Image 1: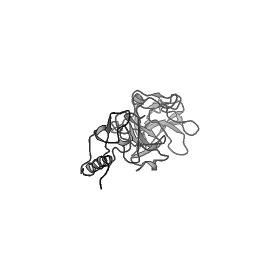
Image 2 (image 1 turned 45 degrees about the vertical axis):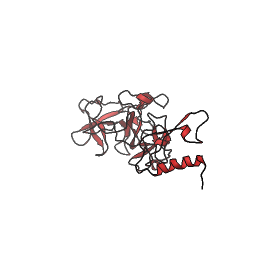
Image 3 (image 1 turned 60 degrees about the horizontal axis):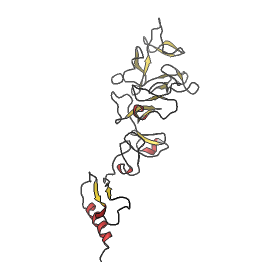
Image 4 (image 1 turned 120 degrees about the vertical axis):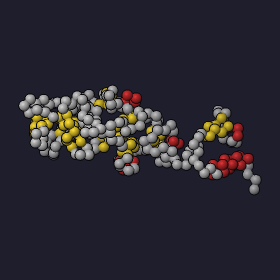
Length: 257
């Protein structure tokens, strides 16, 4: 059977691709005149980017188009240097929960906010989201999407100037801790009021310098938080709603009154 010239040209291209045993790693540029029937009316040449057999970048990685991302993902070009992601409603929609999380209806990489260095790719920073942390755009590059929020120049995280800062009361009645980068609300028990503090690590992420004499002693061994040390003889706590109380023998910390 004799195939029309157009089908012969495309069949040859398919045969060429099928015969490759190694993933193509470069962009193949085809002159429009050499591929019959594909030349657009207003285009004299056609750049055909061949997708790698492994599908390209996984969730959270950079991209310039959907072709750069694995099957089932799309490229969000509004994010810094592009982001391979997918729509989601819960963390479970994104894959293994230890690696991905759902933030504002799209999947993002998880990260360790207590890392000594930024664990996220360039132009992204690690931000606490409840009991997890995710790589979000660095506001020094992308700005802040939340109305009224400002960009913290030291961390690249957006903060709410009207929300709770370190030491401030927090909870359902008193609000969040979005007034400080990566601020979290912590309470010793369900019977005590919460207050704003920050994640830390004794070895890789000490408490911020503005927390005088603060130490990583609250929370758990795997998720420590900064405690505000104080002298009961001359108490000085970061918020007027706190008082200096004994916490494990000779250690005294500032806790809600």
